Length: 255
Image (cartoon, rainbow, N blue to C red; front, side, top):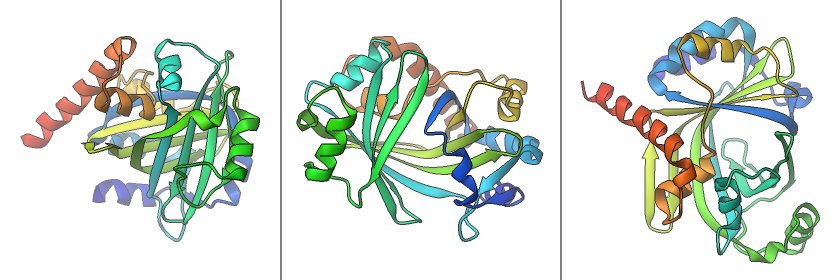
């Protein structure tokens, strides 16, 4: 971890205000999953092309996210069936900056992800009037049916392209908590390339050199599939691929 932090500090920094132009609340997403041990080499290779989000000399930040779904897990099932025009509802807290939002993510049938949010200090277990109005306006169903399902917590580093409208998020130290069950994956990286439209990415080019292929599973669906007793047949291949990465990392660590 210390080597990774040292390399990250070598990147040119960028602050939150400078990132205003690359919020990308309406975007395309490209996901990758790979071994944490590969991250150091990848970062060293892409350093000339990206800046790193830096706040008070820190570039590694903790995220705590509570996801909501209906009692019958409708949102998970829609994702599992492969349908587009699908939603995720979550409360996300940015620990170091002491800010939090209630968010609605919508992936439409054109493959674009649209995110809308309101400031919300604490993860609600029941909706207040403002939250209910926000969700009612953004969702095609009654938000009263939504219940807390799973906590997804992790560490994140954010890179911003020097040449185009592109951000790269690198998530690791994944922790899933649901009721009295918990799973922790320290040797897995979930990377997401967020762009205004699909275009050349130095990060993706670097991953190709390491034979890391596009493909992942949302952190919400991964956590639910691993912890809750739900159907995950359509995710089986992706989950097996992720578990293979995790197990390979465990073998390396034990040597």
